[in-house]
Image 1 (spheres, rainbow, N blue to C red):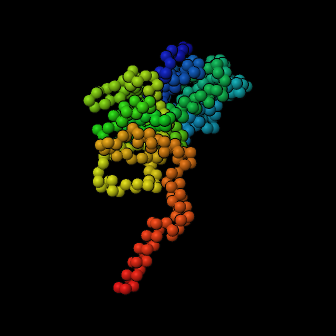
Image 2 (cartoon, rainbow, N blue to C red; image 1 turned 30 degrees about the horizontal axis):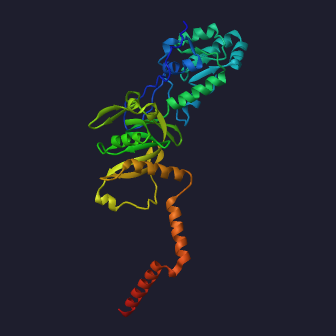
Image 3 (cartoon, helix red, strand yellow; image 1 turned 90 degrees about the horizontal axis):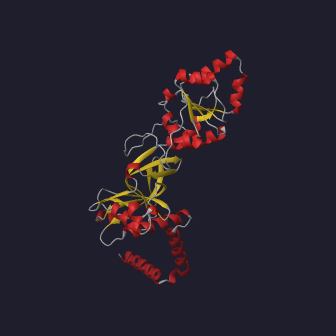
Length: 363
């Protein structure tokens, strides 16, 4: 029985199943049925046989890019989770003798590592392939697209679908084109700050629960869970629909994380320990990726929206290679070297040192 892909509206692709929201790292699970639902349209897949095996898992691997380790051409030495049979593979199977042909197909479909087989290039599967798929409950698909296109597309999909992910409490905004995560204890004013940033033409990505996915060795992409998309909760106002209030351009679904802004309450002990020159850049690790972090103190008269914008501008300048502290220290040193002992501050310092030395000798 042939199974046709289900029709889906735009931007409603089925997300892979994942564990419940938590602050610890989790790895989603993707079944063959998930893969078919997500890629049936783009790859024009048709489910030919083995439909009873739709629950087979495409388990993640330890590779940095699991998609590349899961999908490939027919390989009996290092079996892939998804075998793609192109023109070369079809020709190879066609040249085999009767018994050898049946044994090769049997070995392909009984492999424990194989989850699905895709026949590409609009090639019609042989009766032996269909029978083996139904007998072993291993899904068999066909597609009219060339095999390299199929492999490239599936590798990209699985690399993202099986990427490590975690959920962090905070508000995620796009400020000046940069992904900025605003964190802090509950009730400190994260949502109010997000509302102020929205009024300054910045964009909301997620409120309260932000899901981060590591799509590269040092790249985190933050996105909003579907259930919370477009909504912002503000104490006293309740749930706000940001898309309706501010327009389509006020929200977006996902963005690469660039900067973390941590809101803290003003305390004398903390304020006394602040490094006012910020000579050391703070970072926070999420999914083993170090992200720059700045601390902003919440207090009367402090415009946090302006401070977040300033922190983002400072981050952009650092990305471009500008270091204000280094430039300031260099300018200060050059000024001291140029004026020498003639500078009033330097003269006072030297005079004070001479007076102390004289007093020490008298004593």
